[in-house]
Length: 153
Image (cartoon, rainbow, N blue to C red; front, side, top):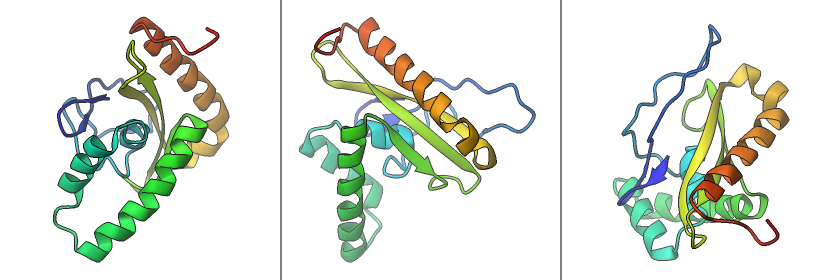
């Protein structure tokens, strides 16, 4: 997924080969950035103005109190995402699916997008650490391909 205008847009989808797999997202999908792991991974690294613009479009139909509660919870979530370097969606977007996402960055260190893996919820925990490790490696490689290298690389 990548940041495009006022949203985090799915750029590509590769479906798994197992009989029970996650489906439903499609290229071009955007919205629900506050609950999708791919959205949270990007939102966590945005400047306040861009983040606020995206969140305003998502929460437009909510009451003021609900918006304030969501923003407070999300601020804590996004702080954790920045600290750990990845985001989770534990049955938030879809009650049968868990997702983990890692951000990747452009040459100047700006957020460029995120890579995500979605797994049927019943299989998530058994593969969580292995999936996270592979995903973080892939996100680092994507950043490097765009010309971003963390200090010491």
